[in-house]
Image 1 (cartoon, rainbow, N blue to C red):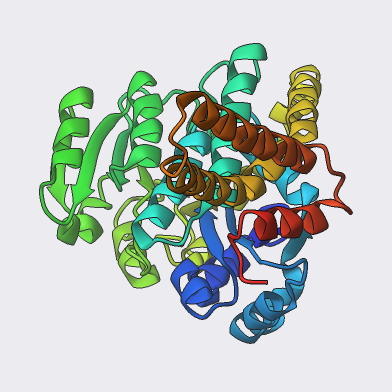
Image 2: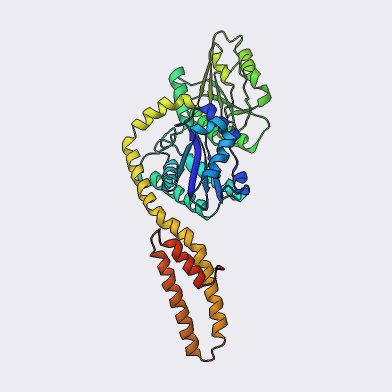
Length: 400
């Protein structure tokens, strides 16, 4: 059975999501420890969820393991099983569950989770098929609704918030820390608004160089960030690191001698790149992902009609999952039986000298195979395990 354990912006504040990242068991430890058969982690700035498959409906061993690792944090986790997991992942892929409904990055993040599980060899037939179907549902929502119109994202909301505070952004000096996908999206919005952008990097990378060329931006050493902050109006951080890149002491020094000119800091990374204590400094205005939630809710209210259309697509797809799941379950059983059939056909036919008799022998074998295979596909959920057992005994693909 398929299960999910995780946290999102809907169930836990940002500090709890950061803690989950640090303490939750990895997909490798879950599979290697035989807590489950398959496992995939979906990690975004707003959610961290582990999907896993157990051979029985009992997920208690995995839950206990998560509880041991997470301690009191486990109480905030959402735990679902069966068809509710399918519905949830389809909603996630459709961006209905996103902080910014309609955001376009989620399909890539889901794909990254799959690819990571493939590298670590923790994904198998159930989760592979489920994630493929989830991406198909997400793509269908993109094409059949206008939910994603306007290239909405956490980064775009951050840029809009900054524009509301400053009024005009033209000529404002912005330093970007983190030139990945989220940083690029934010920088593109700010560049269109007229900001003068510098990209802070530990060392010149292809990613930073490409973004700098696209935006006609400078690349500056990350080590000089404390000094460069003195001249900046806006700092945007979106780096994939575990430590704080901007600390209270550094920001405090940067604020000295600015003549009361405010410093606007946007931290759209998870884990956060900026020490939360910076918000206590006079003249520093720090916003993180959770601070954008009110804007995101207003955006969602304006798209309620498109959300309803997306919900219908999700429900239609979920209704088809039991048939797909049955196919996943039966495929290896039928495959082994078919291999056995071909072996019986080869060994039996060579002892029959007459060509027509050999054809009749093969025909009878294949009729038997198709008749018994159809008995599997026609079975209900209660009868299916018994019919599988009989099918395997018939074709001698299991011992008893």
